[in-house]
Length: 348
Image (cartoon, rainbow, N blue to C red; front, side, top):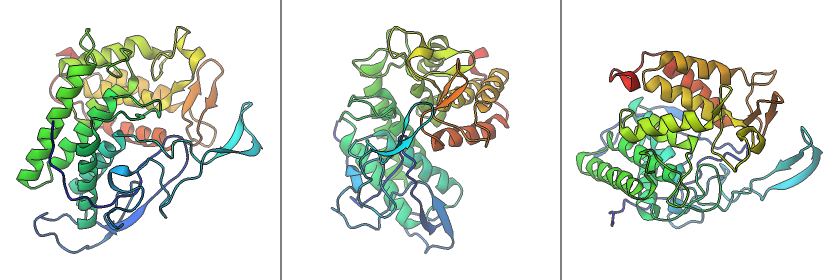
């Protein structure tokens, strides 16, 4: 499939799950007609820096962006031990070992962020150009294997492509008609591509063309609007995630091996909050509230969350604090405050 390309503006950085690197930019916050945008009117802040201000062709920009990039540009240092004891029995580390990875899904996540900014009249011209950068990166690189949301070996992960489809759909609603139609068509193409090689015989999504396991990450494209919650693939995926990856009110990413889930790694709190949102979206508000409260309780004394939670030992594990988890908790609390969507959900 050949996709047309947008203007190759430069971009910088997106997000990382393995380090506490944070980037932010100041820009304007006006909504505009993209044919003749107004000058910036006020300032805003964004955790994603996909900027059109860097010169085209500079290193680590545009489709060559890597997940962890400092706000000053350049490269995040390689991961290294800082010589301090960790907890429990670990070691203190700095830097980020994913500084050379390609993660396709970050471009879809960036488009979702830009779309939210546009809906709230917080997107200026430079940021719109950055959105075009992200869309162009998806067009150029959607056929390549990537490290995926969990920063693993390169595969054609279903989640990466589906979240890009969600981003293209979202930003397309704010684009001029020809551009919006193009991005919507590209989203349809991505979903067809994933359906062709990542649809499990049971009707749910599977992790990749070569990995038939279910993955909790596959809840996110439904939450983000890649496919409708009433779509049979969404329903089957939600059911499989609950049946195969849920234990004691917590959710695990995927089954690592034949061992019990809790012996392979800790429960992922991000996944628990995602499940709460997916259940709420599927007209199961009581179950959604139970999952939300169960996972909300897995914080430390200062109220901060880690990446993982050891259910048996009642211990916090992994990166601390984990920004992704806090973002999911805040989003879930906001979503669950509203009534479920009107389509009737799984109980219709």
